[in-house]
Length: 196
Image 1: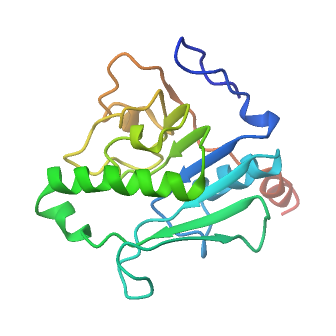
Image 2: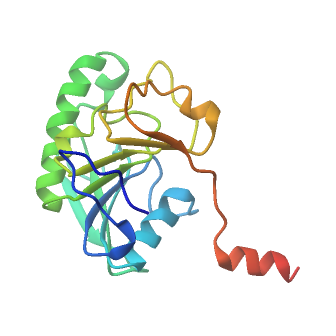
């Protein structure tokens, strides 16, 4: 898959490898793996370095403000990124202040990961209202679940993908490219189903 070329963005062939990709997920890495995990694995398998950003840690397993990056046991090209924002409760009581502080959090995560070529955001809960603070050359917003109201922005993405037209219609796209890409099925599951 190649991203659209523009005057400000280089053309990326995501399947050629050699890119640093941040995948933002509303689900943790461990446990049941869904589309976000499958995209991360596929990006890593073709030679990209993938940073899988989990949702915020809200318990006491991390210190407030801490960011950790750990290697994934199942794939050496995937690193699991965790962060613990001290201000998370503001998301529900002072959204504009929360968004401001999350822009700073995004900068800190980007510095911890290093230069990012692509940020691919699957988070429909809008922990990050804008993808610009990650300073990636290409920003993709890809909601695969219904958008959590009252949010609807495209998060300043360069391109928007969604798994269904009803989800895409809830995103304020403006003039950026937007496409429906339905859920796929990995070859292993197709093979399993054919033999049942």
